[in-house]
Image (cartoon, rainbow, N blue to C red):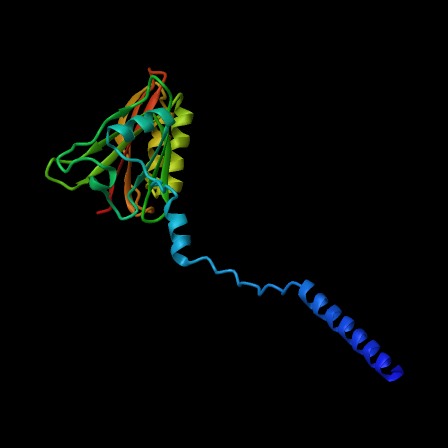
Length: 222
């Protein structure tokens, strides 16, 4: 009888221990298996990039483009290939191009990207030369102005330095005109081609006037 009681006691203890182990195991939540983060697909990246609106850094010469130039006072033309194509500036093949005049509202910051470097100026008049049969513009023309002979001379020397305009020709004209700054002289300096485009300074000097003018002609290099 005493042996039977001991046996029953051991059996009860074993049962309690077993139940405790089962309860502990049941209360432990399984550790979640980490799910590796899927790398962003290239198509998603492309899609995200594709949603960004990319605008050209160059100006157009259609009605909207000209309005923007007049408003922003910024014009950038692409002649890096050696010419300015009509299709690149959104005008029809038979277009003669616009004439942009902002004398009543301030000067435009004009930049022309050239094959080697760029041509830059502040101007209030830009115009274009072509025929209705050409796919490109044969010339871009803009006007530089100075309030004195000294200011005009500075502009001329800038052209010599930046665009390769003939230095000897320029200095001869400056020296000759300086002897009589009340005179009048229309003179075309020898063109420069250091940018890969032909840049010509057509001087319109009149000492009796308050403003002196250089008509700058930019065309494909011969």
